[in-house]
Picture (cartoon, helix red, strand yellow):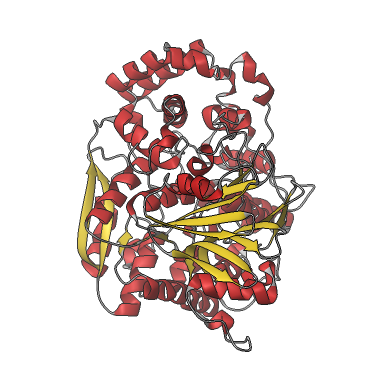
Length: 624
């Protein structure tokens, strides 16, 4: 992908400063000067700069299709940046955004000198950060590293971010999407417009949401056909932009549905990459086999051994992300992306977003139960709870009617339809390891929006905007930027999202089975074994093994280091006890939950501190 740099600073030499910002990234730099401002782009993928009489536009990303412009008199022409600039000049920013479908972030500098306008696509497929400059003015860039190169923008971590990332859960990392890991840097949230005024104020408005429209009525087969048509079109318009692409493939429905749609459209097998493991806990060779036989022409296997150089891999990721990395999944993805780029592919299609839209995560069951309870459907509720327990009971994560009721009561507010509650059990599990200096965050209450009267829809929106999706998209973006390999995610097509928001919950979860409508929509596209599989492994990595033996010893050494003391985030005794407990659980095979979900962020946090001390942002992207 391309990377943006924008600067409006009266006290800085603009050409030199914008050049230094662009030097943080890979790709050929291009700069343009406007009145009192400068803009640039490091070209390493889709994007461009357009100079229009009404203003200057810098675009990271691309637009899909042109049907959205057909109703305009004299539709704009040119490349994507020129089209978007012309639309903004004609319609204004928000109205222009409503006309386009794409993966993008952009900066618009009006010719009248009124400030800078920043915007991102509905789900933040491309990033954008900004900061106020000490001497007045603004700067914006695609990653924090572009801003950290400017004088007066310190790399001091945001204290709330330290607490959320270091001692809570990966779902809390993006609980406050307008903030960044750095105290002096803000983020443009997905689906938002931010106007940076000459008066020093930043004004934010939401331009995209999944409308609370009436639910669709009609028979399920007809709605499944509509979903199938939308999915095929979402994949098709993206295939047209990326002829030289490959697909990620796991054992789940989402990546399989995207790949199978491409086969249906083009009438030929596709090239797929899969991450596999020596450890069988998360390996999906057997689940992938049916897709390989039917839809894959060439299969690339990226195999992770049980023993890896964890420090080298995590340092590499932090040097690409400018921050600690949410979960161990993304170490696997880094290796996959590097191999795909090395083979010359220019885009990587995947299935992210499918779980959220189709209620594919286990967390959605209590929300569906709560919707049934709110509707007075007690008989249906009892059937669903029984089927859930039958299909999904686990020796560690048990399922039963009593547990279902406890989850509903803990995670939803029955007095306020559609109001979901934070999972305090998950939030509080590791709060005891926060040091006294961070005690104010032990009872942190994450923002919980309630835009819908359905608990399932509200939970989905929370995941799309604040919990599961943002950290995943960020990781795919950073790896794409490092290797010139944009992520392409058809499930996040806005038309598909709005359609799925109108699908009743009973067509997403029924008889203890998720993704019901998608299963019907992909009948004939997917192999039956893939389409009807109920159990969900999840795309993960064997990090539980990485933190035993030598890995555990490494963690203990870190916990006794000066780096640990300087950070001041953790209680040493609490961390050491968790390391010991994790090693005991994994090596003994005890039927209890291990502590991988704490130890991965803990290790990342410590390595990020080392990167900050070394001023790693001064290294060009991909070299640190």
